[in-house]
Image 1 (spheres, rainbow, N blue to C red):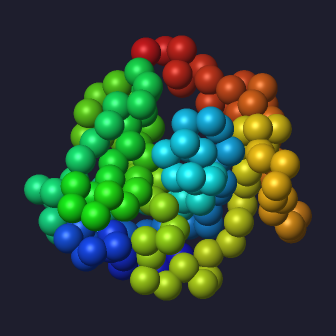
Image 2 (cartoon, rainbow, N blue to C red; image 1 turned 60 degrees about the horizontal axis):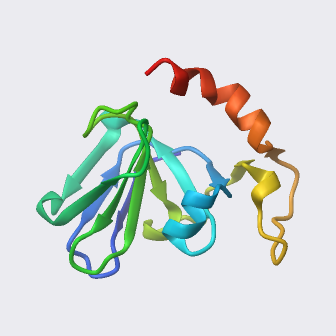
Length: 145
């Protein structure tokens, strides 16, 4: 997909994603507690992200392998980074609600789908991976740290 722009709720953090693909949804407990539902996010390669307003970004290390960022002014969820324990590194999983125009994005996958809350279901034909399947696919990267 072509370049996308976006911002937090108050506009203190703005960004340009020079490339962005489809999006995924994570239903793990951490993402649910962080966003209040599930994390709907699109991957932006680290080298394709341009950020303005970085001084107000606050980061929380949520595990040994990942960090989560939010706006220090309005509190808006910004992105998750699979940084493998190295602060300020890794691709961005940008919350799609921040994008100025997310209309062309397509849902590609759900992870931790077996932890999805019973009060909602996402329609469509896309990959749905359980916790075991998610950890089998990505877990070896986590264990190498």
